[in-house]
Each structure stands twice: as structure tokens, then as C-alpha cells.
Length: 214
Image (cartoon, rainbow, N blue to C red; front, side, top):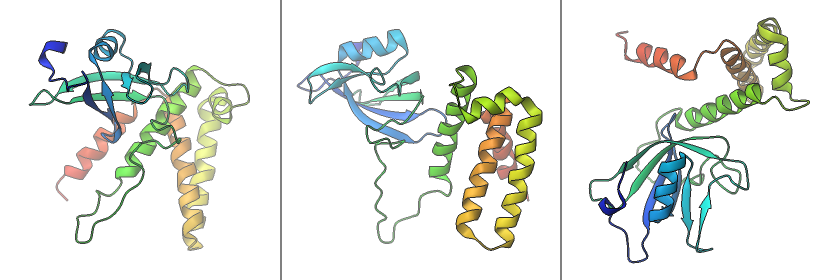
């Protein structure tokens, strides 16, 4: 547990909090916490913060439903900033974006962002949404209907989507290829969830292959 006495609070009794996706590492939000917010976060495992505009404590997702499960809290070396690693149940930003840092400007001569950095965050968020649909199937949900049909129904859809990916590629239709690939990935994630295979297991295998000698 991080003791309040170990934190270097500013003149207003606040400390900056960087909130990052525990799965992808993507930065979601920069917010602030006071001692009470930190205490509640550690006691409940839910993100509590201090709103500087409303001047009150607030629990992330209490109104929107986009809650965050805090899996770890780190204090930086100077004691004047916190890092919450979270598993979000929905978008972090009030605009509906996955991250509050959705606007990016490329600097001339700067290194490009790692390939797939946005993809990792998006696919992690989609996997969590699918898991939530399985645990709490909404009425009329397509995902819930797939789960109800089991491996046979999901597998049939994967076969169909794989064929459509190939057709889009042969037709040299970039937009259609992106669309059909997204469909294929979505149905594959549903199949993994149906069989109880964590996305991290697939990630570990991909990392092993990426680091393997060619």
C-alpha cells in the first residue's frame, strides 16, 4: 500500500495521476487525486480521483458505466506522481475515445509510433467488451447470440469472414480488406472467449515468435 505520507502533495493537496491500460500499456488519462481519493482507490480497487473543476471526489464510471479496475499503483521516484494501471470496461475519455490522448501530431524528423500501438489498445478494449457480453448477455446482442450458438456457430462465421478477407485482398479493395479483417478478428476474439483462452496467451505466443531467430 502507498502511504499518503510518502506522496509529495502539491499546494492544493493533489498529485497527478497517469492512468494506463494494464493490458496494452496505452496512456488513457492524466488526472489528479487527493489523499482521500488515493485511499478509496486502494480500498476498493476502483479509480477514485479529485475533480479540480467541480472540486469534489469522483469515482470513474459511476455515471457513465465506463469503470476501471485498478490492478496496480506505482509512485514515481520523486514521490510527486502516481501511475494507475487499470483494466477499463469502456472508453476512458468523456468524448467516447478510448484515450484522452486521441489527438496526435507527428513532429518533423521524429520517430514514428511503434507499428500497431493503436491496434493493441483497440483489440484489448474489444476483448474486454466481448468478455462482458459473455458474462452479462444483453437482450438482442449479436455477440450474445454467437455465444448461445457455441463453437459451431462461431467457427462457421470465422470461416465465412476468412473467405471474405481473401476476396477483398484479391479485389485490391483496401477499405473492404480493413473492414473484413476487423470482422475476422472480432469473431476470433469471440471464439477465444468461448473457449476461455485469455488474449494474453495469444500475445505471449506472438511475442515468442517475434523474438525467435528467423
